[in-house]
Image (cartoon, rainbow, N blue to C red; front, side):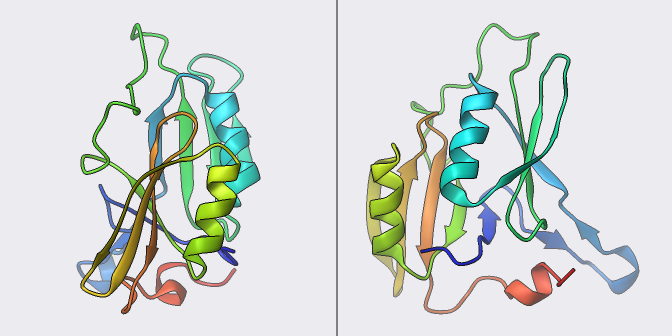
Length: 159
């Protein structure tokens, strides 16, 4: 079970600190999804997020944050485009959101029972990597690394 939810997005590192004076933190990652309300509900129920804010007008963005309030995602539906990206057809190698897991088997079973689909499972240099898709098709990776990629306490300071 994921005791705390830690995220590493393939498109970005949790924070960039070229020097102490110019430290920058990623505030959120935005995804245009076909059904923001349903996607937010699934992520809240199954990945430990909670809704932080909602926009009552187009694009009806919903901001969800992880349990430690240090990573946010914006889920929205852009009214100016005819359709949202088809995440089901997108290669997970192009974009995925990775979650560190200390119970890969338990998290895999729990998430597939909740509607996620298994895409692949590999071992790479001692790291266990499981690729899933949530019901909206968004690629989710579960990672159990021999050496953590980030220092959790440094990346997300205590409140």
